[in-house]
Length: 434
Image 1 (cartoon, helix red, strand yellow):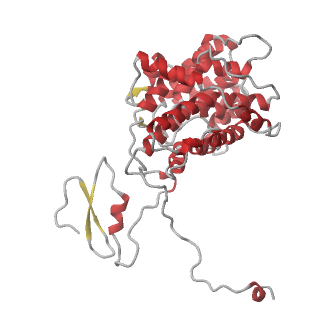
Image 2 (image 1 turned 90 degrees about the vertical axis):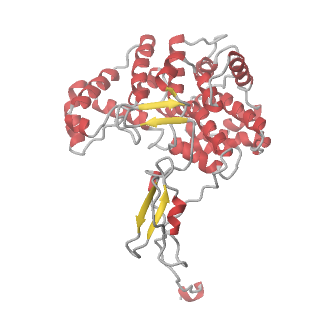
Image 3 (image 1 turned 120 degrees about the horizontal axis):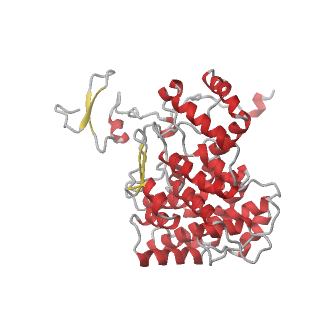
């Protein structure tokens, strides 16, 4: 208890006891442990917060990504996503996220060379992936194979060594497209394609996906650029479910492959990585522009769900959605226009003008158009999340590296509110089963 509260503090009165407590405010937050001093008696536990889903709880300090959901702002290391998508490329953005600054020409060339050199995986990985069922989900294969990489690089457990961390980060960014492409090929019953190190990062990925009997596969540059932009848009997004999973598992000081495998598992879930697939299903169910008014009424009545609109963080336009919408034009110029695009545009137009959706701040998010682009590439829906994971890998690793070097971090161990029985008397089976 304090007599005079400091300016940057919160004065709390416990109405159960009448006592006042002065709790410091730093960066617009209070330390949850400071609430522990508020208690009825010395032998009882102190006050704690109850926050399912971490709706209003900060778990770390981070300098990787900044989001202002009310203003529709997304920045990587201080750089607006719009500028990065227009002027940069995925590997440069990956360098920025991991190292905290844009590379010089020499740094960039060395970074690209390192990643290109490490795109190949051990031959045993091929046998490992052949062991999956013919109908295995590519995301499940990716999650398992990422985790398996930890057995190929046991030195990855030495996370306190900066050079070692760098090596694992390079390996993982380099090998994710290979693992993702091989998951795709396995699901289609096609032979695996080895990396072509004459190609850039994204062009090489497309080659491993789609190359057949031709001597060399060269994708249309417009498709390469569009997919590169999509990777940039997905590269990091603050403390989302999968990033929180990477940090939570990483807090046990496990190797980064195991931590990232946890992130892939979190992304596998339909509430996180599967939203763009849900948008496609919605558009196909609507079927034509003429059916949109009835669908909109169904949403208002609670009988339909408007997928691809609204976001847990953004209460304004998702800045990534605007960029993806522009990328659609380049992709459809090559592949032909997806007939679902007209339905999507009309649905967006109506939703942005209708007071019901405007009042609820339901704006298009990144998933609204990304599924249309992926389908234009002829990716099956089960591959959408794999693409997301490849793009998100540099962000996961930047967050993991930040966690490892953060002296404030401890092993994740949230509190709980126990709701079960107490102090029951055990009766032996011989007595219970009479």
